[in-house]
Length: 77
Image 1 (tube, rainbow, N blue to C red):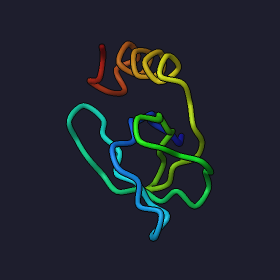
Image 2 (image 1 turned 90 degrees about the horizontal axis):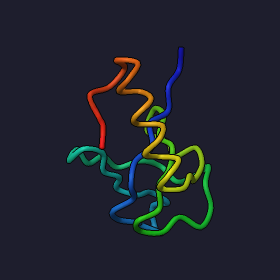
Image 3 (image 1 turned 45 degrees about the vertical axis):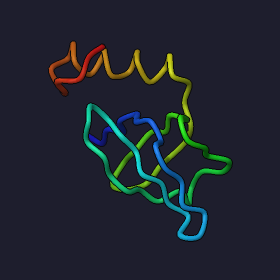
């Protein structure tokens, strides 16, 4: 099973087509090669170091809550 987690973009680097995302205090640099028009404070789905697509803040929160309820993550609002 493959899971993609939503994370907030905290920094965008247009030169390297990458971004730093944050989820529950953890920051990671990811590739933006598959997504266009990403800006700081957007939410993106992350899988294996790549942002797959943008999602709304509400969708990100719902997804993280469902993962937490299923015991797949410890993240919750």
